[in-house]
Length: 403
Image (cartoon, rainbow, N blue to C red; front, top):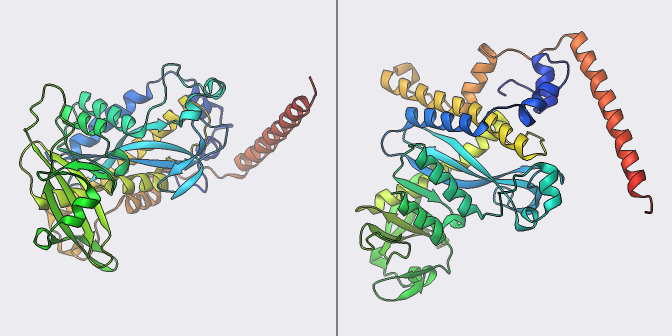
C-alpha cells in the first residue's frame, strides 16, 4: 500500500508486486477468511498505547470517496470535504489524538435512508441483513462504545455541528467522556436567566465577557479570536447520574473583524477553564488532517471496490498502513525532541509524508517493471476489457428486449 504507484487498486498492486493477475488480491478482499475488524482493533490498541500521554481525546468527522453507482452505500449525498452534494461514499471516522501525535483508529460506512431501504442493492453488495439506517451521530456513538470496550481511554470527545445532538452527548457522559461539540445558531440552551438560542445568547453577552485568545499560527500569521464561556443547564444527563455533577457550558467564538460567531456545547466531568476548552476546539482539525493524509499516503479512498466486505477490508489495510506512518513519525519526533540535537533546531518536525518519501527511497521494494511482466499485464488488461465489453453489450441487448 505504501509503494510509489501512479494509481492504486487491486490491478495495479498485483502488477507491482509481481502477480500474474489480481485474483488473489480480490480473494483477500472479498472471500478469504480473516477478521478485518479484529485486525483494526489490535492496530488501534497498538497505536493508542504508543501515543497516549494520559490526556488523549477522540474526534469524529466524516470523509468521502468518489465512487460509482453500483458501489456499496454510494449515493448522491452531502459531503463536507466536497462542500456540496455529489455521488460518493461517506464514512464517519474516529481519530485518537494526544500531544505526541494523532491517528485514525476506526470508521463506519454511512447509508442514506433511501440506500439502506433498497433491498436489491443491499443484496447485490452483500450488506448484512441486521444492519439498518443509522445517522452519523449514531455511528460515532458506536465507535466510541467500541473504543471503550477495547480499553481505549480518553478525556474528551470532539465533533462539529453534525455531532452536537443530545443522544451522542448523553452517550459521551455514559462513557465518562467530556465533550466539546459544535451546535447550530438555533440550538436552544437554558441559562440561569432564560431559555434562549445560542445566537440570542451571543448577542446579549456584555463586552467584559469576551476574552481575546490566540488559537494558533497559520501561513498568514497568528490567529486570534474573541471567546466567551457561559454556564448552561445540562440537558443530556444519563438516567441514574447526578445532574449537578460536572461543568456544562456554552463556548462562543467570535471573529475579530467579521464578527462571525461559532458556538460549542461543552461538558467536563470536573472543573474546566476557558483556555482548556479553547485548546480542545483547536484540536478538532486533527481528524480532518488524518483523513486527508490517509487518502494521500495510503489510498484510503482508492479501493474501487463495490461490495460491503471488500470496502471494509480495503479500509482496514489502508488504516493499518496509515497507523504505521503516523505513529512512527510521532515516535521519531519525540526522539528528536529528547535528543535536542542543534543540527535539527531549524527543521520542521518529521511528517508522515516525509517519512513515506524516505521509506520509498531507502526501504520499500520497487514495483516490478521488467518487459516480460509489463507485456503480460498489457495483454491481460486488454483481454479482460474485451470480455467486459462483450458482457455489457449482451446485457444491454437483453435489457432492451421486450418481454
